[in-house]
Image (cartoon, rainbow, N blue to C red; front, side, top):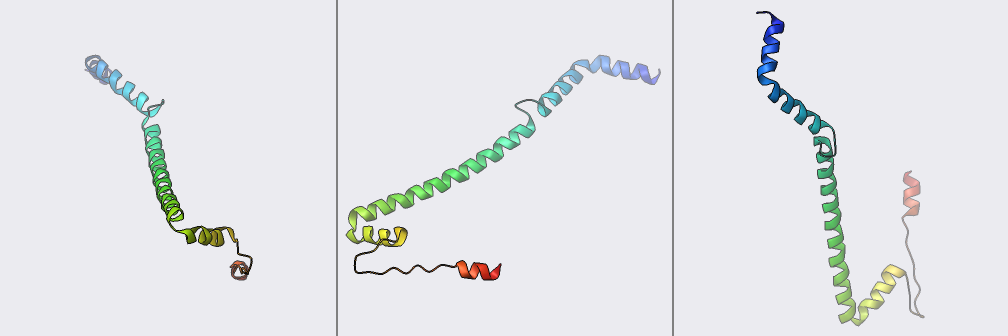
Length: 106
């Protein structure tokens, strides 16, 4: 028996398995449900879950700040001074900046 006849016999007996194998291979490499696309989507899911966690953390911090504002009358003044640089009429504000240090190191 020649090599060609052996190959032909192998293909003849296993042609359905070969079609299934190559079909799965083609679908696994190309298309919307390929392995590469699956890995990309898993990576995107991880990124979005990290973003959700950061938003949840920010939400909790904002909720705590709202509770503080509602219960402590001095909290509004503190937030206005620290975040918005507001002042009372008899106060002066000094804002210290790190710009000079950054320019010196560059």
